[in-house]
Image 1 (tube, one colour):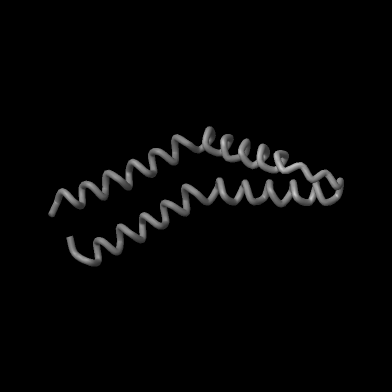
Image 2 (image 1 turned 45 degrees about the vertical axis):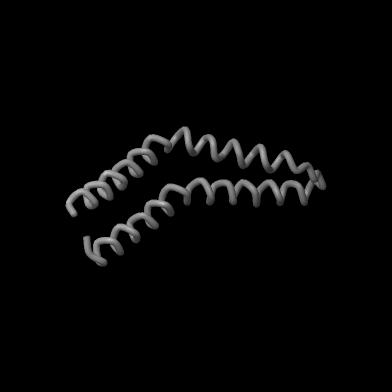
Length: 87
């Protein structure tokens, strides 16, 4: 295993982390902004409102895309172990 293979696998790993974590982070950020605007307009400053909404969005994303996320992570892990085994 040479340096270029290691660099390629690390680059792929970072890309996979962004692909898997991005949707949850972006959707929870959007929900947080919408809840913050709602709270500013209505002057309801309940902290659990934003937390529960963000948590429910993350759970929904995991339920909808969890299989795809697991398949993507398993494929990457198999490639890493296959590359280590060819040494």
